[in-house]
Image (cartoon, rainbow, N blue to C red; front, side, top):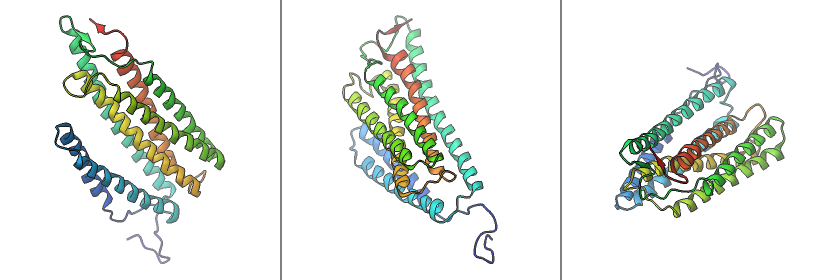
Amino acid sequence: MSDSSAGHPKHQYHLVDPSPWPLLGSLSAGAMFYGVVLGMHGKGWWLAGVGLAFVLLTMFLWFRDIVKEATFQGHHTPIVQLGLRYGMTLFIASEVMFFVAFFWAFFASSIHHLEAPGGTWPPAGIVPFAAFHLPFLNTLILLLSGTTVTWAHHALLENDRRGLLAGLAITVALGLSFTTLQAIEYSHALFHFSGNIFGATFFLATGFHGFHVIVGTIFLAVCLYRAYLGHFKPDHHFGFEAAAWYWHFVDVVWIFLFVCVYWWGGSGAAITE
C-alpha cells in the first residue's frame, strides 16, 4: 500500500507498525493503580510495585521505539510532527479535565462545610500546611524550572548545545528537588488521606500533581540524554518540545493548587461562614 519502486513510501505519513506497548502499558497502569487501592486497604503493596515496574519497562521500550522512528528511520516528517502536536495538545487537554474534577471536589467539599451551621474549612481538628513554608518554596522551584526549560528550548533553536544541556540538567534537578520537598512535606502532615474530606481531596489533588512531576522529570531526563547524544536539531525536536509543553502544564496546575488548596483552602486561620 505504501511501497514505491525505491522501497520508500510515496507519502509523508507514518504507518505505525503493530506494537505491544499500548496494551502492556494499559494493563501495567491498571495493575499499579489497583495495587495502590489494595495497599490503602491494608492488602499489601506488592501488586502496585509489580505494576510500577512494568510501567517503567513499557516507558523505556516505547521511548526506544519512538526515538528510532524519529531520529534514525526518518518517519517523523513535517506532517507527522503536526499530527503529534495535535495529539499532545489533546492529551494535555484531557489532563486538564482530570484536575478540573479534583478542584471541583475540593471546592464542593469546602462550600458544603461553610454552608453548614457553624461550619469551618478546613474542618475542625484539621491542621493544614502553612502555605508560605515548603509549598511556597516548591512554587518558586517549579516557576524557576519553567524558565530553565524555556532557556533550554531557545538554546536548541539557536543551535547552542551547551545552553541546551545546561538548561535541561537544571530543570531535571529542580524537578527532583520538588519531589523531594513534597515527600518531606507529606511526612510531616498532621492529617491523613482517609477519615476526612479535607485530607482526601488534598492528597488526591497534590499527589496526582506530584505523580505528573515525576513523569515530567523522567520525560525531561530522557530528553537530556538524547540532547547529549545529539538527537535534537533546531528544526526537528518534537520530543523535547512535547516534554516542555508537559512541564509548563505541570507548572500552571501547581500555581492553581498553591493558590486554591494551600493558600485559600488550608493556610492560616480556618475560613468561616
